[in-house]
Amino acid sequence: MVFLHSGFSQESQSFYASTITEKVYTDLRIALQSKELVHRLNLSRQELKSFPQEIFQFENLQYLVLNENEIEQIPLRSNQLNNLVYLSIKNNKIREIEIPDNCLTQLKELHLDFNQLLEFPELNNELMELTTLSLNYNYITQLPPNQISLSRLQHFNMDANPLRNAEQAFTYSTQLERLSLFRTKLDSIPKNLVFGRILKLVLGDNPIDLKQITASSFPKLEYLDASHCNLYSNTALIPICKLKSLKYLILDDCRIQNLPSEIINLKKLREISLIKNDLKVLPPEFYQLKLKLINLEKNPLNQEQKDLIRKKLPKATIHF
Image: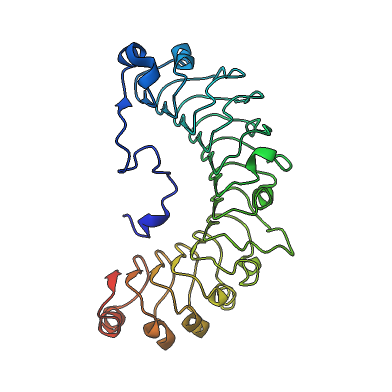
């Protein structure tokens, strides 16, 4: 079930923005007949076994999508594709990618989710300044030291990679707004740093102690996903309750037995998901929140408690 805030979708919508009126070419043969007019090319689901060399002929190409093919290599060349701002090659068989000097110099968004990458892409290109990098569901084990190309990164997704140093993801950019590290073995966050621009943080299914998520380190955090983390202790949730900017909170399958009274501090909270916990009753302070959406599925709440919740929060959409 789709639950939380669609406005924080991890998938960039740049390619399909409703304000764009330029034609999107989906047939390579037709596109080759009007090379200079091709700004947007989508060759997804076309059973491509390799990166089409003809793509290098489109000197004005800005948006390229090659999702759901069987491409194994991307033979990028220097002085090529330098007008490209958006590149998505999801769901292929890419094992490595290296961006040579003076190539993709205008690139802002790179999406390589669901491939077979074993190492982090070679992105040390001084002329390229990525704002979005998405590498979800690959096999990357190590994040490299600071990358010049990532200094302006705003959105960074590394979900389901078996990282040995996931905390490095916090250090690439002071512009970072959205960071997703679901199931990356994250166990710590760099100390003594303020992540003043981060609005969305996904840390689910990691061995991290959530006491490290402090209000002083994340003063503007609006969305937190800490699902599948162990919050069995009665005090484990108290630090989260100090994140006063929070609007969206996901705590699914965290073994929570009780919500602390400090939850009243989350005055901006509008949506909360508590699926598959051990809640039998909610504290009085919970009913003082101005919640719009609550998910309490798979909790041992009896009918009396369910009726009470509906009565106390008549304006909220509630799922049991």
